[in-house]
Amino acid sequence: MTTTKKNKLRSSLQIVTLMLIFLIVGYYAGKMGIRASSGIAKPTMIAIALLCIPFFFLVIGIHEAGHALAGIWVKFDFTMYVVGPFMWTKENGQWHFRWNRNVNTAGGLVLCLPTNSDDLSKRFSIYAAGGPIASLLLAFLAYGLFRIFSMDGFPTQTPQQLLAVSSMVIAFLSAVIFLVTAVPMHMGGFSTDGARILRFAKGGDSARFEILILTIFTTSTSGLRPRLWKEADLTEALTLARALQAPMGVYLLGFFHQYAFDGDDLEKAEQYLQEYIAAADEIPASIRSSVWLDAAFFYAFAKNDLTQAQQYWTMFTPNAMIPKAQVAATEAAIHFLTHEKEAMLGKIETCLQQIPNMMDKGLGVALRERMLFLRDNKQGYHSVDM
Image (cartoon, rainbow, N blue to C red; front, side):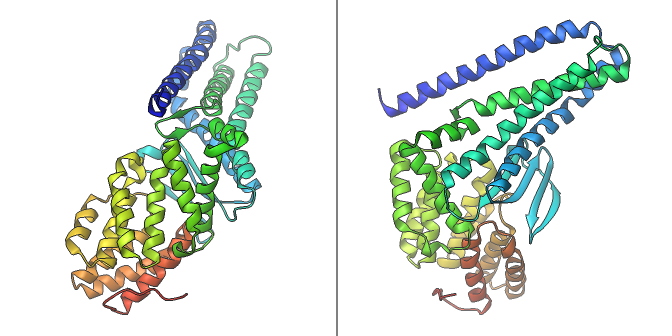
């Protein structure tokens, strides 16, 4: 059996497993609901119906908070917390609230970045386990509250009924989130928390690949500019990605592009960029725009090709996941080609102000150098030591 067929079979089995989990949980939840519903007052039913969405966000929020606390415990830098339409991001050491308009991250997201590569396998296992553990604890706590509220029989008064039923609903939702995230599964390039923990525990090529990805990412987020990354790590990771048909492999093309671009090898940088563009459909829609932004900036700044730059720029759609500094830098490079000096200088200033907020500090170093170079109205690009 070919690797592709094996992957399809595995994916099908995982979908069936997930469906069975929902059926089993739904069956027992339905039995409990039918048994309890006969004694639930109409006002309680209406209130619970109205509270279902807030309860869901609460359960997701606790799950993501578990990841965040685990990340902080293993010395990761906690930088983003998203629950439904709510988003908090850390900029210059201060937390800021904004509305999350990205549907792809509406389910919940926490971003914690390692500041060094020490024992990443163990630390990421703990980080991954934080969410399911928090969900399980919440399920037990909420169910315990339900038992307390129902200690003398199911309450007949509306306030007590509302508390009891609310606790049961939260317990059920949290148990579902625990099962869905803790059971090891891979679907559509997505790995559950349980799958990641198991992968690290087993070791082998899959674990080695993920550690390499984490090491490369950590190297950059800690402030090492792209041209100083270890080419051997990039090459090994790309080789493993192709052998494993790993969905994360597509991002390595972006890493290679930045590595060559910062090293002044524009021919290779363009080659990797075009491969990255060709594989863009493999990247989730929520962050696919970063590919078009990279392309627009490269063709404007490095190749002085206004036509190509504008083509990719029109394909770009900004979102909260894409650094404002990179957006401003691209606009500045395009303004340079269109001879709009004042507009260019304004965007350069915006970029320089936003660079400290970039999670990728290494890329920020390279970007700052390019903006200073552009500000001096140079006609070509030659990197200098920082």
